[in-house]
Image (cartoon, rainbow, N blue to C red; front, side, top):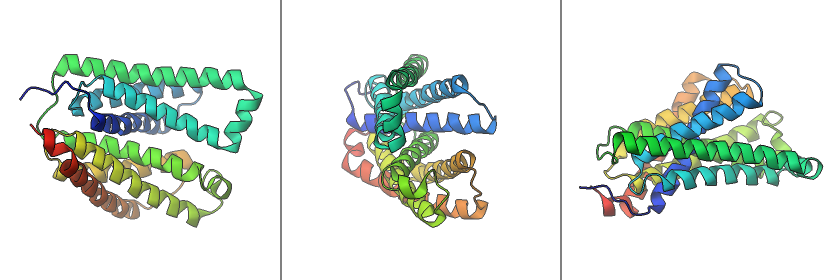
Amino acid sequence: MALDRSFSFSSILNSYFMVAGGVALALLGATYLKLEGNLPLVAAIGAGAFVGGWFAARASRGSTIIEPAIGALLMVATTGALLAATKGGQFLWHVAQDEVLKDAGIVGGVALAGALVGAFISEKALGEATTSALPWILYVALAVLGGCFIAWQIGVVLPYQEVVGGIGRDADTAAKVLLIATAVGALLSGAGAGASARTRVIAAAFLGGGAGVFGAFLLAKQLLGSEWDVAGAAVIAGGGAIVATLGAAIGWGLIGRRGAA
């Protein structure tokens, strides 16, 4: 069956999470390498968006380039909106509007360019999306990592910015926020994967979901300086795998199977 070249809204959702996952993965690598400064950070964002765009094109059932580009735009818009919602972001906007606009333009442009180039090369080099469920282990892992990354930002920045203050002053509240956000991120990213896939990916969602959640906790440990018990993180990853599988089943049942290969 030939690849459906029509526009796919489900692939936008999946690309949104996968590009965010690529950026989160690149940030994880940057923290382990102890890279500092604006240039390495921007380079990491671009490289991560490239990876996310590459794999989003492999996972997309639609036109493969447009969806990752829109997903990258939505990811940048989400981060910008969250920054604008904080008192610190509002302060920066008032005292350094030109600098904020400049930085936002650079980061957004790099992320968009990275996702576009990654998706374009992926499509030209590898052709149409696969109908095999095996690669979806990686695709779902990347999407769930991105889903958790975005959900954590929303969960921490919006309702708990006064209490958590960067996560630390109220450990119990922070832990609850992260757990709820993890579940929401895994469910939505799993649903996006199930809706975008050309074949049923329930088993792949379980394996990929667990890997994605575990990777998200590694990122949290690196960014926040928190100490996570490996066994505890593994248990949470198992729970995340179940939630991601549920999301994939919902996405497949509602949308994915209608256009199955």
